[in-house]
Image (cartoon, rainbow, N blue to C red):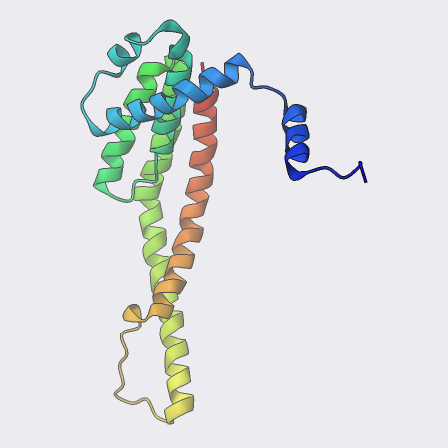
Length: 196
């Protein structure tokens, strides 16, 4: 019977196996959230990011900068609106301030801007075409269903765009189209994070 352990004993054994956090991990846990908040303030307010980082104690700079960069890169998004376009520019400006290898950063930003231009121009055309295809297919389904139920559909006009099923179908198609752009953008963001 002495082999039976309490839940507390089992938990303590697991904690011992995990080990203690390193100094690096403790500093990361302490300062990275401050960096994330500073990144959000930079995006929201007109603050001098470099001046704010220069105010920090030297041990915190690396971790705060890492937190700021995480926030800024998370805020780069497919430019579906003017607000997102402005937010993207602001986030990229902040990243450029913090990264040392400005040339590599600019190269990746050029690729991101090309992706965004494609999304806005050719992507918009693709979305319009896809919308019309989804709408036509949905109208055909509705007409067929009505004809089976009522026999004749002469003179009946249904606005399929207001139907929840149509909206759901369109969202799926839109997510598929946007997914291609999001995947490329995620790759560029990973490259950005790897730059010193």
